[in-house]
Image (cartoon, rainbow over all chains, first blue to last red):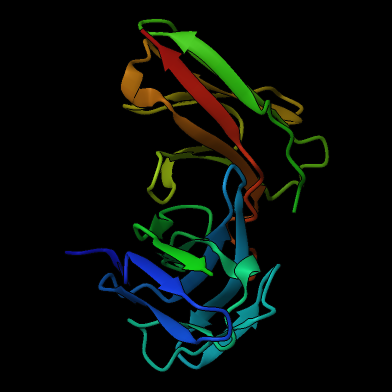
Length: 115
Length: 112
């Protein structure tokens, strides 16, 4: 049981490049989330999904896109990378039976630098 | 979502008990109080959750007074490995549309 798996762990992008951060969970969780964490700060919610085919914006969605074609996968897309997107990105999942405030499982993060 | 206020940072020594207090004056009737712990370079992990009075597990205790406007996370006999950021969160666990909003948390530094 791997939990929540994020790839890659590290990435350096040039301004204007695009990339997809991958997130996969094997716990059959319906809820999945993307957060970003800037140095010394708390986590900010980018996008979330309550099930396959359903996504919604969080606090800071600008510059990002998501899709949820399967229960397991929730990729985050950066289309035109900007230095302001330099951050650590965390994917998380939870089961509706336990609610989003309980049993929230996080991945180990992707550290992204845009230069 | 109820807003929470907690100290930015705390220092303590190995072997001592550490108490981190969180204020949530506008907590709603259906809201629960949840604490997460985040080690450097890792995602947060669930520590403890409660609604009222006292909850205890193998990691920590959570004290919630009758008015529920604050809560205290208690870590018994801390070690260096307890150095982490601790987040206090308040929300309705039964609301599928509710989302976790993290503040800056409390940065706990344990000294030898």
